[in-house]
Amino acid sequence: MGYEYALRDGAGTVIEQGTAEVDANTRPAPIDLRPGAAGIRRGIWNVVDDRLELDYSEAGGQRPQSLGGATTYRTTR
Image (tube, rainbow, N blue to C red; front, top):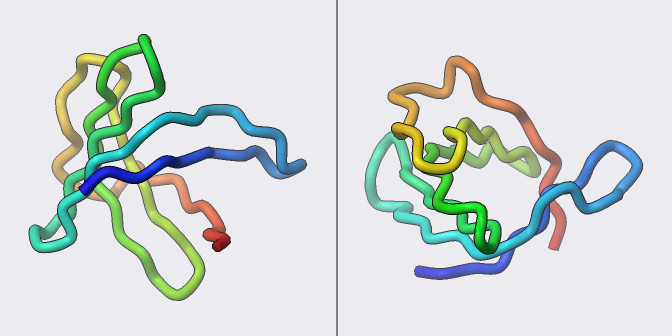
């Protein structure tokens, strides 16, 4: 399923935006981020309460196997 996303820094400035394809039925849950012409960034994710744990590769890289290097983001609606 495809979604639009925006990653923001602590001040709320958008640092990346694009579309994301996710699969919530697999663990760890895969995500493919498409920030425009930069290429596909493959990752994995988990949501706990209002926090998104996300670990992803550089464009064209391999998908991480665990959330050991994940960054945590606050989610909003």
